[in-house]
Image 1: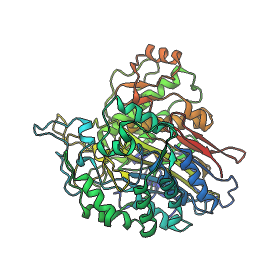
Image 2: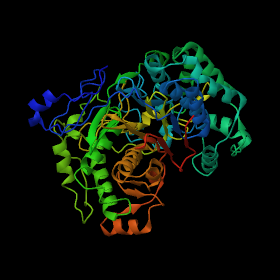
Image 3: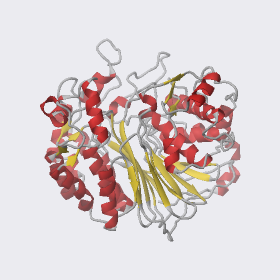
Image 4: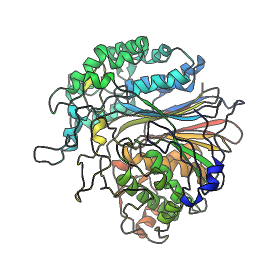
Length: 589
């Protein structure tokens, strides 16, 4: 695959199109296209960096997962080798968020070649899925928690197959090596982490966990306490099978049979079949990349909406002097909120699995279009209402208001060669569908679809369910370059709030000159629908936003980030950041 290139000859002959952003992979998902920039000043391409001397680092949501990644790096493993180890351990110690029963998006930069490539391990709806799968007998949407715990919610898991694809291309160590740290921890036991213990206590007074989760995590009816030793011999056996047999050890044989049996149980059994598992194929894609100030920002393309929406937020803010309106200014936060509102409105209207629906990718990120959206922002007043715009190439759709529940994690790995992984991984809701098979939780990823296939106006919804379709995601693994060289990598969990969290961190680092940790620690303000502000938002900023007309609510939609980032300092050193809202750390070997 060629490096991301700016085809300047095309830029000279197509300016009338106004495609003012670097787009890669603008065609159908299975046929990555070439990088094209039109109508903007030249932006440096991502380049090789064979002289990398900045060292290595892992930033992830649990110290045991970070140590697993570092162990593999010390053995000479690549960023992808370490990513496999991190994921395997996260699925054990942070089962509420991600695991081999879910899916992931992985963005990779090679310092040797300058290639930037995306690996799509998103779950797929089984052959038996229908547009009405989340409607009751009266044609009304099922309550979310009923749908979550149903067998219908589970898509074909994609993480294992995607990691195998990435390893075949980019791994340095034998496949089996990266699974060993998790196998040891699962067999010998590990101390229950603080966040898992907290969520188990909270679950006692909320919607009760499913039977499988209770049996594993609430022995004798009491939640596992922080520091208690937890073992998972079934998970160890599954990982041993994967380590020995590769991804086929997961997608066929006894593990696959256990997955299908769990999804087929009442209530509301699903249609997931052995054939669905056997036929799953991950995809190797080009990312979408675009300029922001002096930087090149690369993210994930559909079926994720994250890359589009983050670049939309940034492309809108590019029309304002954010450096002059810093993190302590009401205007800076006002601009950030309004840019989010515009981006979310477009995302909800137009983005879905682009193998099934026409996504106006170029139009949504067109510089002229984003300039017109930015012109809607009043510096002195909040916009009374926000609706989707009409980007070039868009067919009119009905907006989707699907889900804000999240069970997701993000991590960053930089290896000693300078190669980078930015990977977001998920089981969707907390503990996924709460159904277990062979020692791990199954995803409830299909509840990321719109429960309604059409809007009240009768128009189709881009993110409606269909057999073989991938639900839209908000996952936003991101890698940023300056002068063609790696600058930083970042991402977050948090449902549709991911777009806000990642955009906030990027503005904090790129516009406000904050360290990764300072940018991550900024308060979260999520502006999809009602504007939700985290409790740590300074009261003076809250009052100032309210005075501009923003109606600020407070809720978990603004609390659930898990940002992790690694950045290269001007002096060539690596520095990381880990979200204090979770258990994460950033460490070097």
